[in-house]
Length: 384
Image (cartoon, rainbow, N blue to C red):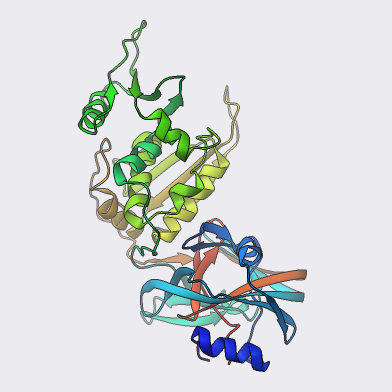
């Protein structure tokens, strides 16, 4: 199998040459892929957004990309990979549902995943239906990859947006940050250094909470949070380079995050299901292997609480990347016994499927995708 340049692939499509005889279907339509310039997007949405002619060849639909679009691929290490084509594949037959910790993958049984074998300390490709036979782990990024997004938001604004998502409120004339009494002075000092007019609002009742009305920020936030909904990350914030995304994540963690004192773990709690899933995908892009759990309403609670946790080696990677951006949380650097950097496979289920599967052709031959977490899947739809 070999991957192709755009010009070579174009010639293959024009000449009507056959698909790779090892072509093995694809992944489900709702699988998330991280792309520049689109951000987080399902593979089916991406197929529809590609404004290029649809070619039907050897039983599948193909769109060739002329404009550069990049995702994260693997070539000995995680790196940006240009997407050459996107495929929509009619499929009728058995598929495999792979559950790996919080992540989920639905694919044809012969589709390949990049896996890590702890016993031999090596990476290799394994068919989806064979993942349960040995002690495999699904490969995830081993470093933070910055795709070629055009930066339109600076790190300070991204941090404040994250803090606002976690602990902010709209008012008519100001953005209100609602923080603990010990944290409020730190943020006031930070805001004043950035040139914002703010102060700690005096409370009528004794309380541990403090409100910080911040003036001069509301007009900027209205451009970012266009629907005034702060219960999820706006799309424009996700279409930014890695440094901006890290500042955004740090703001959310400073507001809604918690660092365990007795173990190497970060936890973020939220009642927004959409925000929880966005954070899972964002942290997966960073290679932090997040875990998503939910707790139904209990006691006087009216909402389901979603918790995103990062621990083990992923915790060590996360605190190293987040330290320059955090303003409030004090990190206790802990060692961890969990040294591996891959996703454990929990279960493999096989069932009948009648619909479309999707795939990408990339320069690296693979790409990062999945649901509630991401791993590297092999591009098996290469034309030649």
